[in-house]
Length: 145
Image (cartoon, rainbow, N blue to C red; front, top):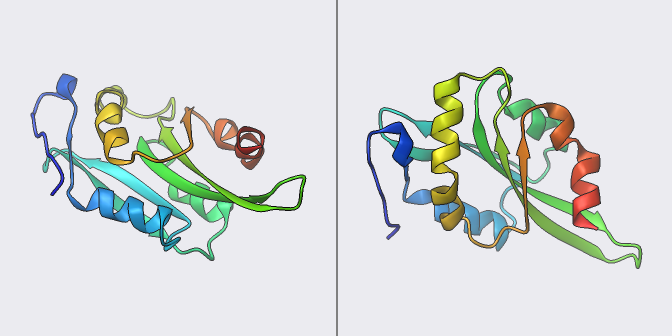
């Protein structure tokens, strides 16, 4: 059972829904999803799974799932082929905080990031992004190689 912290003030961060770890393991071990989008449910005072993307979905599908004016956390399972022609996969944790999002949202997501990262132990790279250019597919390619 996942440890849950549910303080209500924004400076202490949010709790994490119990199914988040299981969803991460399904992406990591079973390759059940291409990506997972997480959002903060302020009424529940916790981070929850908002959406999972099928393994057939593209990176463009993933980017289209990130709201233009609101923050999210995301995991993306990036498949690539190395220079030695070996198929590899790296999991990216993305903290999406667009400059157009509300200040309260930015604060909540910022203060809750370490807590969700504890549940997602095992991802390879972290990207903090404030606009789409910072999560361009080329950025992932460069980091993964």
